[in-house]
Each structure stands twice: as C-alpha cells, then as structure tokens.
Image 1 (tube, rainbow, N blue to C red):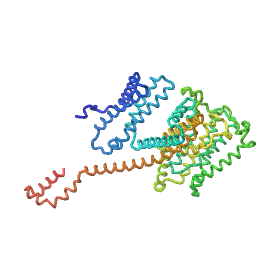
Image 2 (image 1 turned 180 degrees about the vertical axis):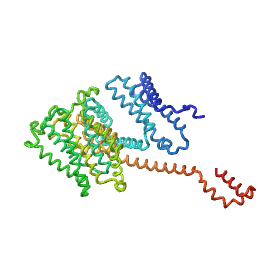
Image 3 (image 1 turned 45 degrees about the vertical axis):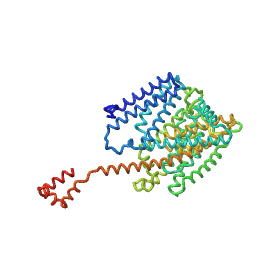
Length: 527
C-alpha cells in the first residue's frame, strides 16, 4: 500500500528528463521573484532531483526483487552516490547560471541554470557509479584540507585568510582573468595528457618539458624561415612539433626496451640535452635573430602562419582566446577514444596493470612501451603551439618554461582522466592568475604555490585511501551477494534421488505403496 503514490508503470526516460527540466526551471523562475537568484536555483534543482529520484525509486521497486547485483541497492550507493549527485547537480546549475549571467539577464541565466541542474540530476542519478562518487568525494575532501592548510599558513603569517580568498576569487573571475585562465589551461591540458599517456603504462615521462621546448624551437624556426600559404603553414608547423616531440621521447622508449634504461633517468638526461641544444641553436648566426635590445629569438612567423584567436566578448573581455583551444579539445577526445574504444588502448591499460599477464595474453610489451613513449612525446610537442601560433609568434629567451612539470601535477590531480584533467587545468590556471593580485595587497604571491602543492599531495593520498576503502566495500558486498545467491539456490535433483536407498523401506512400509510410492512422495518433497 506504501507504493501506491508512485506511478503504476515507470515513466520513460525522455519524459522524466523533460519534466525534471521544466520543474527545475519553473521553480527557479517562480522563486526568483521572492528570493535571491542563487537560492531560487538551488531550490529548483533540489525539487527536480527529488522528482527524478522518486521516479527512479518507482522503477527500481517494479524491477526484479531477486536482482541482488544492482549497485543501487547497496548501502554505499544510498549514503554516498545520491548525496554526491545532489551536490554536483546544484554546483553544475550554479556554474551554468554564473557563466550565462555574463551575457544574459539575471533571471534568464538563473532559469537556464536551473534547467541545466535538473538535467544533470537525471544523468547523475542514473549514471554516477559508486567508485566515481568516491573519486569526487576524495577530491572534495582534499580541497577542504588544502584550503584549511593554506588558511592556517595565512593566519600564522598575520594575514586574514577570508579576505585573501575573497580577493583572489574577485580578481580571478574578472573577464580578462578568465581569458588568461582559459589560455593557460590549454597548454597545461596538453602537457597533462602527454604525462597521462605514460602514466597509463606505469611510465613516468618526466621529459615533457624538454620535449615541448625543443619542439617549439624547431617548429618556430620552420615557420619563421619558410613562408608558406595559410593552412599549409600551420600544418607544417604542427607536424614539425609533433615529429620532434615524438622522436625525442622515442629515444627514451628505445633505450628502455633495448637496454633496460629507466625512462625517468633517460628523460631527465634528455631534458638537460634539450636545454643545451636549445641554447646552442638559439644564438645569432644559427636560428636566432635580434628581437629586441635584450632578447633574441627565431624569425617571427608571418601572419599567414598564425592561428586566429577567438574573440572573448561573450565573457566581457577585449582579449582573445587561443584558437588552438580546439586542438586541445581534439587531443582530449582522441585520448579518450584511444583508451576506451581501440585495441591499442586496451592493450595499453592491460600492460600498465600487469606486464606479465599482458605478455601471457600475447601482447608485445616492448612494443607497447615504445609506442606509449612515442605518443606521449608527440602530444608533448604540441604544448608550446598555442602560445607560439596564438600570441608570441616566435621562440625567444622568454618563451614559457616549466610547463612539463606542471603537467605532471595536473595529471595526478585529474587522475589521468581526460575530463578530470580539464578541471584540474582550469583550477591550476585559476590559482596562478588569482595570485597575481596579492603582491599589490602586500601578500606573498607564493600562497598559490602552497595551495597547489597541498591539494596535489592531499588528492593523491586521500584518493588512494578512499579508493582502497571503496574496493574493499565492493568486495564485501559481492561476497554477501554471492552468499545470498548460494543460500537461495535449490538442491540438485540428484541429491534427493541419492537418498532413496537409505529410507526406501521404512517410507514404503508406512505408505503401503512400496518403492514406487516412496519415490513419488520424495519427488514431491524435493519439488
């Protein structure tokens, strides 16, 4: 009788999505007349979440009651996944409304934000797994710990933590700051993906920094000395950078598979060699010309070889976003497809999990190691191109350095996942940009470095602890499910027949039907 309030038949998924979006947007629009927009949006998203959860509960109740394998019945799902889905839905709606508020009126941005949050509610309730929710919980816990540590450092230094964080948030969300954050995160993302490809194979490509700097130098020289038509010029520069980065990382891969040299040692040495080659080539009379009084660099790339930027007027800024942001997006999509939709990606992940098991399955482990380092270097060669083709147009002494080491931290922070790396790159770039205002207030800019280092360390540690607990909980849950399945499995028919000779005479005497009657009774009991 307690289920009569739920729909007799499960609503189809598209209908639930439409109703949830209308509910979230409608409640937000209605309450916006009496409440602040963010409060109205939160209530609207929560209402849509409750509706989606209600329909999902009705669908579950109508399912097979003997299905013990469904993760939605576990305690972990009820205590962690649902709260995580609710928080992510609300945050997604708030972020969408905040971004839309840059171009739309407040009420329209809040309405669309409520619709986005409602759509996320449906997606997360039905798709968010327990292990992924654990990952979000680990990142959230690490963020709290990092914020507390940073606040403690500020407090004991005689600086007010809350006003400092407020100042950083205000400066980091200015239109020009947001454009700079997107541009910086583009290069960070490419560096992190290059590192993540090696991490998937349990390879530590610490040489991304040398690979991208050498690739950017030679690509800039080719683009500056060769005057080519548009499109062809950009293509030649990109191919040159990819080839140089791949060859330089391939040296470390070749040494590992043929001589057993650790890729860490090899890439560190190759970083030093790349620095020396760059310094040797970047001199007047070789590849460099005088750029200014105190600066030399490669000849500027003609305008036909530039990649046009994207006007950021929708953010309220007169600056431009790097046009090669689309290249970074394409690399992220390609990275995901390679890992999850190709045989090479499967073999890469299998080899990273266990080289001996992969080799026993017929995988050429040495070939996979070499190719992984090669592909990692090819992506690393792209790291300097957004800056080269979108802003500076030449490689000089002041070209950004150290991005490869930043990519290592971002890959760890994003857990080597293409989407996780996006948020990690944006977060890292935000801290760098937001800290730029602190010296004007007499606050050390290094506070951002403290926050970055703390959050990377805590994410790695907390994620590992939470992930191990999650795996242990899943194993225990599977064990209990297998135990219940074994208890409810009926005894095989051969067991009851085997007991016949032991009791046949007694039961036959009582029933007065002999052996034939006894078999009939025993057969009925077995059924």
